[in-house]
Structures are given as structure tokens and as C-alpha cells.
Length: 365
Image (tube, rainbow, N blue to C red; front, top):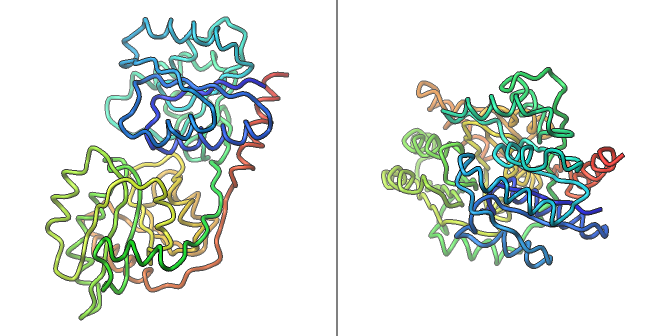
């Protein structure tokens, strides 16, 4: 089977990592995979390099939004040249443009919705999505919450979008020397507990919510103790987050170390994992953290309560209401004192690939 995957870009995001994991397993089963990115090559080459290491050479369209109609014709020519058996697009923009570019070619098209998109000024995209929905052969989402949200946003009946959970494999515990080295490198050697998270430094991820809790966290930390707070990742919100971090009280050491390709391993360093997102399609970093048994505290939005229902070592906390900051801080401090539990895996990468291949076969039939 020849599978063509189409993405917006190849930065280190959740959808890109899912497409990478799926490609790896398709290749392992003797399928052929090709890849198109609508945008130009990214500054962070980690995902692109991982595809290249598997022998998948991405095609870049250098596309600047839906207005660049000429690139849609180029995409159509590329699809005809690659002649895939299945086209699998990920995220809103690829889903839309691929419907136009593949129309009439007789190639089954699967669209995947990875996010419950809540940014402003996206009404035109939802309207176009609903209008062109019949042009895709099938559409799936990465959680039931995201599927129901998208169905309502585009005016489709419930059940129009199926669900395949993202795959995450257990994250082995690194040796103590590895963890101790990072504690020392980040100046956290004397910290009693470490609060941690990882993801893009973006408004969606809500890390500003977490950093606005610093005064309340400071008050909740036991006297004579110093705690650490680490947010791993990179993105456009770095400046704002650094400004908030600079106001940390004396008993809190805040670190924003940047992007790490193996950031998920750091969940073993954290005493509590926090996910304060404003909206999520799935919550890949949360699912990864759960495979380490770490206590987790999450904002109860979209898919996060759905993912947490598989995991008893969690609590939902309101990160958005200023009136509940003290309560949320208390919950984080309380959960940082909990013990780890047995790792929990919702869906492995192999199980995810099995479900997608089964869907591909259905579409081909």
C-alpha cells in the first residue's frame, strides 16, 4: 500500500509526531510512505530529520495560506506524480486544500482532526470545512471530545467523524545519573519537589496560566522548602513567559530550558506533571506523562478529562479562573507529594497503526 501523508508543516508538534510514528510502523509492515508539507522547511529540523532517517524525503510546497491557490494546483500535480493508494491529511489546512487538490482523482482521502480549534477568526475555515466535507472519503479525530466539537463547528451530525486515539509507548525510566545531571544543569539540585510540563510555548498550552500561579504556589509550599518549576519547549510565547518567570518568589526556581527532543523522558524527573491548556485535541504530552505513573493536574478542557478517565492518579483543576488560583495551587502542591502509580498506556503506537491500516483497507475496498 502506498500512503501519502500531508501536513501543514514539520515543526515538533503533536500531529507531526503522530504522522512520524504512523509512518515508522507503516514502513515496518512493508508499506510505502511519502510526505508533503504545505509550508517551507522549519527552523527546528528534528521531525524532518527523523523522516529523512527513515528514507522519507518530504516535499515542501512553500504555501502561504489558502489564498495561494496556485500551490493547490502544484499539490494536485504532486499527488498525481506520487500516485498513492491512500491520501492521509492531518489538521485543518491540509484537510481543506487536499479535498480540492485530490477531487476527481479517484484516490481515497482520509482527513484527521487533531485539535479542538478555539482560536478567533476561524469561522471561515469551519464554514469551508462543512461545505467541502463530502469531498473526503472519511474523517477521524484523535479524541471523542475533538470529534464532537468539530462536528458541531462544521454543522455535521454526531457520528460523522470517527475516533482513533494517538499512540504512545511506555517511556522507560532513565538512570538516576541522567536525571541528576539535568537537576544539576538546571540549578534544581536543592529543590524538594519539581513541578513540570512540556509542550509548545503557545497561547493554546496555557503556560501563562501556570506562571500566574507563582504567588499562590509559593504560599502553598511548606516553610523552609524550595521547589522547582520546569516548562520544556519552544515557541512564540517565550518572551511573555520569561517575563512572568522573572517574578518568581524566592522559594520557587523557574526554568524554561527550551526544546528537548526527548522531553517526555523528563516526566520521570517531575514530582507532578501539570497541563494547563486552554484547549486540546488529544493531549499527547499528558498521555506520555501517564506512562511514567507521575501524578498529573490538568485543566478540564476538551479531551483532557476524557484521557484522564483512564488514569486514577490525576485531578482536574481550574487554571483559568482568578478566583480559584489558590485552590489550584494547593492541588498542585498536594499532588506533588503523591507517589507514582503503575504506568498507564491508553493506546500504543502499534495499536494506533493497526486502526489506521484497518481504516485504509476499508476505504480501498
